[in-house]
Length: 130
Image 1 (cartoon, rainbow, N blue to C red):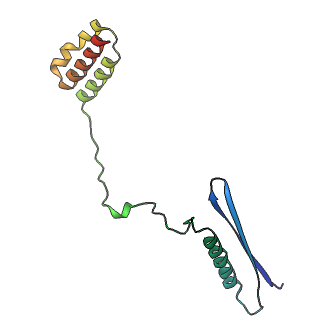
Image 2 (image 1 turned 60 degrees about the horizontal axis):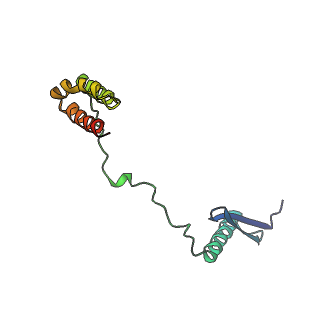
C-alpha cells in the first residue's frame, strides 16, 4: 500500500447550533514520517481556524477546579439530641396550625423552650393579623 495523500478535518462549534468545518489535504513523499505529517497538517488546520475566528478563544485553558489551591474543608458530623429533634417536629407542627385556639396549646411549650417561643410568637402574630 502506498499512502501519498493525507487529510485532516476538524469541526468546531462557533456558537449555538453553529459549526465550522476545516479540512486540509497534503501529498506526502515516501521518505516522510506519516505521523509527523498528520501532526503538521492538524496544526495548520487549527492555526487556520484560529486566524479566521479571532473572537473565539477556544485554546484558552478553562480552570475547572481550584481544589488544590485551598486546604480541604473538614467534615463535621452534628449529632442532634432527641430534644432537638422533638423541638424541630413541634415547630413544624406549629407552623401548620390555622386556628388561634389550637395554637394556644403550644404556649406552655414556648415557655420551656426558647426555640419554640420564637416560632410561637411569629405564628401568633400571623394568625392575629391574618
